[in-house]
Image 1: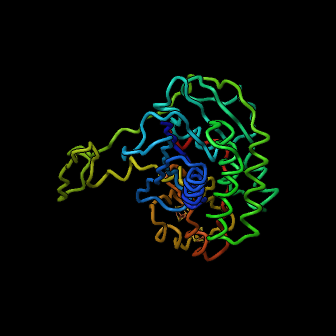
Image 2 (image 1 turned 135 degrees about the horizontal axis):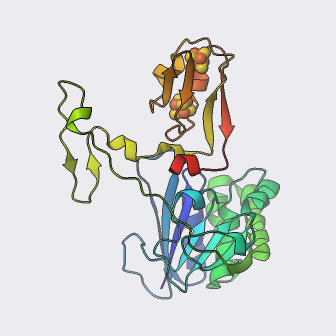
Length: 304
Ligand code: SF4
Ligand code: SF4
């Protein structure tokens, strides 16, 4: 049995892709189970999806912790998440990136298949939705079913949801990635910081406040302060930036920010980028067009 873990971002079509994969395997006479894993995250947040494929009936229903294959739809995620965690020694990473395989940095050195799925999708679909291209790359990497079955799967699932023309374009994107994927060995040794749960000490509590600590059976900590361990800044490539010269100090942004990331220091307002999830609410309410959304490439500041 092959176990596959997909690392993507919410709202970018990974569920549709996993359905198309399951249909393709069905056409090939194989067995498949695919399922996404969502939390409270919104569009843009890192999400997981899983697939098991086999020649016979699959009974296992758990999440996949030791996959044979990982598929990374957005290479920004390589900075944020240890995508290779649990990947079997003989496993393979299928990665969307403009870098050659030997420049891909993971926590361990493994076989990787790399394709610039974003450029393929942008060129063929007109938008950077990489799900179908990454399916083509995956099928080439595992050589479990022929491309013609993937084609049928995409036409069926995407066709029902998006219409025939778009489904055909997605087949084209998948075929291009299937043909262009390059294989090699990644670099290993990339380290990832672990965010420690935070709970206030007695001295840090506001006067008159009682904060009971509760640790759930799965180790998750709940209660005031626990939001600090959910780094919502990983949920988007963009961050809010305040142009101080245009700001008239109306403070509408500060009061509307759902993450409480906007701080006032003297005359200046600043955004805590670690928690800015780029929802754009501050920009929408700003009374003087003083907020811009800035794309970031390096997430090290957010993950520190
Ligand atoms: S985009 Fe603005 S409102 Fe949304 S989280 Fe960031 S700072 Fe807050
Ligand atoms: S809403 Fe705009 S003008 Fe008002 S404080 Fe925020 S950045 Fe400044």
